[in-house]
Length: 259
Image 1 (cartoon, rainbow, N blue to C red):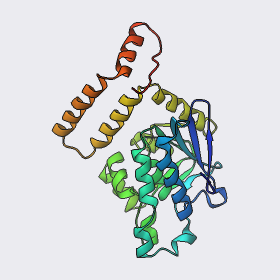
Image 2: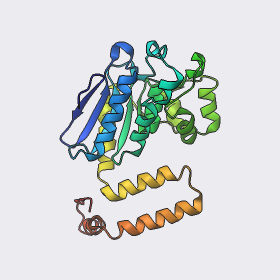
Image 3: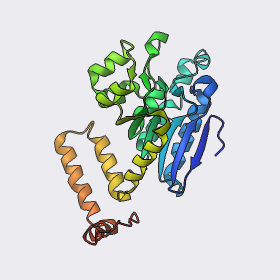
Image 4: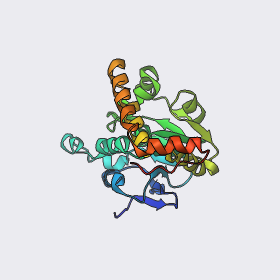
């Protein structure tokens, strides 16, 4: 795919680094950038060369500093309803492969929403999360009012969205918005190490666990437990289960085939 707002690199482990690349705009998102993000995550499930994705931003100041404010002047009710932004964050969330946000600097507005849609968020010491849309007379439109409350609780989400509180790196870890905080120069390597640990899981069990965890945010306990039991039954009929058990008994690394 042709990319104008992102850079894509894929290493020998199949870990794709998808980098927002508008440093002169602090990697802010416009409609074209949202379309590129949506297109990439629509295709990534079918790409055999990509096993995991890390989203990050170019430069040292910003992950993604929200929307391109100049583009907001052209927003109308009609084009807002057809925006690719909520579809893009949903595609990230539904991706069957591990997706990690390596947050380097400002993650405001859409940047915060993109990070919230990822499986994990690893932050550099200069990272800052914020959702300042109400100060512009609008509101988050890529899942911010929904995902953030599930991640950090309604009270803290209201403090960020309604009172405009920004969350710095260490606090993000303490409230569960991020999983770890590392120095900026080790951010990408830390994200790759985490991706490799996730890739060590059996592909089928990983995908089912991811769906179960996401479903747990809305399903009642009884339904969730039943879905978990059914999913376990599915994994017990796979070649991967037999390989995983045999590898453990033989004290070797498992070689999963996703079958």
